[in-house]
Length: 348
Image 1 (cartoon, rainbow, N blue to C red):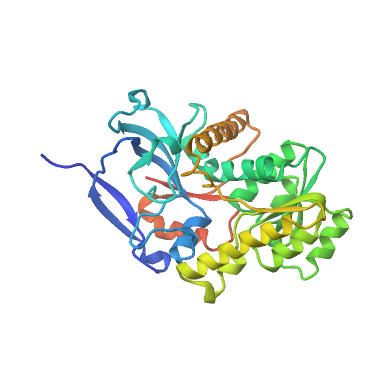
Image 2 (image 1 turned 180 degrees about the vertical axis):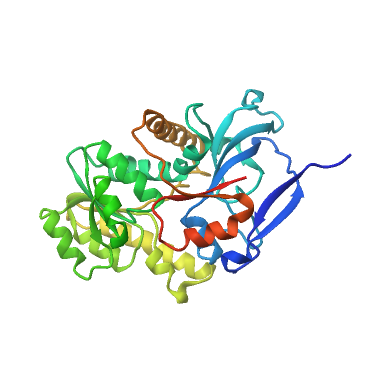
């Protein structure tokens, strides 16, 4: 009997994008609570770019197959699973393992995709969409008429968050490189240069009373400036610490632990100050192990809302480029060039 083979991409260690390996391995078998999915689309996010450099908090030991999320069709259900899932198109958050022609996923991290939403569009808004929705509506809780400052406005999360905010009647000031400003203006965002040494003063000109929320993916001094820019009652939501992790002294698992614990501790301390402001460090996977039922409810509800908005044409899935899975090395290099507006998609 011949075992069916699949193709997957392997990240062997701390290598350049060209060091990714295309391998062929036996097809995996789903266990209880798992599904085997034939992957139709997966993609490249900041997480995979960080993992390549060994700078993603909690990443597995090398070698491993990257891939934070996927969209595909269920072809096998693990023992005791829901057989009605067979043949259904689903989206799944995987953290790793999605860069393959077929992948085993956890059923509890998987949500059905509406038939009217394409695999590519669904893939573009899975993790990015849930992250954006939860930061805006669960973490910051910004109301209609409010103003937010968004770092990484041209990125995958930023692009969806700005669309959501504008749809909800919220003004968006977007910090990004000047080369992205024209596209941001066309989308209704008021752009500012994230590298402007007078950025704080510029934002105060646009929002003299302060902003209702800041979404910060840089950390360090940017987080401190962001907290100063908040109006009373405002919220700082940090969702990455790119600026800190670029520090060579923090490479390695111990350095990552120190960096993230410092960021979380800083948020707790700032929230305790008697100024009406609050700060939080957003973690997409919070509660995944300790409160799995609640995590599942939020994932299903929030991703369901995102898919509905895509289906209605309210949200546009911004795809920057498409590559075959076997060209993942070229795709990753392009994604890391920081010249794109949108997400790079891999198509097995």
